Structures are given as C-alpha cells and as structure tokens.
Length: 112
Image (tube, rainbow, N blue to C red; front, side):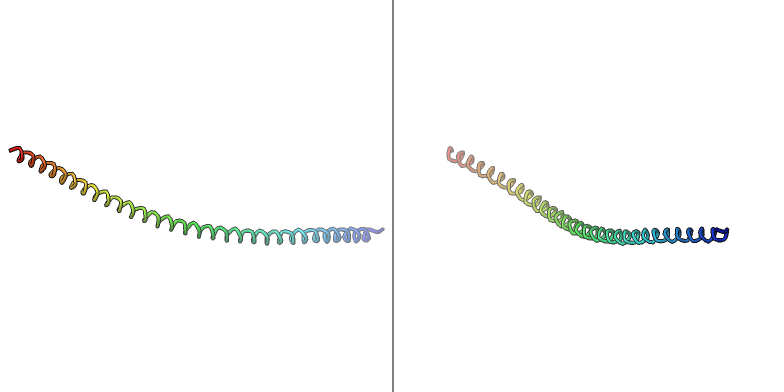
C-alpha cells in the first residue's frame, strides 16, 4: 500500500466514521424534537388546567364576596331587630310598671 493509498483509506474510514456520527446525531436530534413536542403538549395542557383553576377560583371568590354581603345584610337586620326588641322591652317594662302603680293606687283608693 502506498502512502496515497493509505491516505485514501484513512479518508474513507474517516468519512465512514463521520457518516456514522451524522446518523447517530440525526437520530438523537429526532428524539429531541419528539421530546420537545411532548414537552410543549404537556405545557399546553398544564396551562389549560391553570386557566381552568384560575377561572374556578375567580368564581369562588365572587361567591364568597356575595356571601359576605349577605352576612353583612343579615347582621344589620339582626341588629335592627335587637334594637326593636330592646325598645319594646323598655316600653313593656314601663307599661307593666304603670299598671302596677295603678293597682297600688286603686288599693289605696279602696282603703280610703
């Protein structure tokens, strides 16, 4: 084998090695592209789920605001009823006291 033949053989061997490396890298690149597609799909699904959860949280927050408003209204109504009750109770005590005084006065009148 001459020097030129050896060089040609080495170049052919190097070319075959490069071709093999190219094929391996091409296969790896295809796998990376497939994984990238899967990752994008997974990310898209995760984003859709987050959007759904955020929508549900917003609905729940609105429900809680409405419940808070309703509770505040009910509390105001309860306070109004308590004030009315206290006023009526005071009037009742005054009327009962007046009636008791009338009974005493009638007894005194009858004793005279």
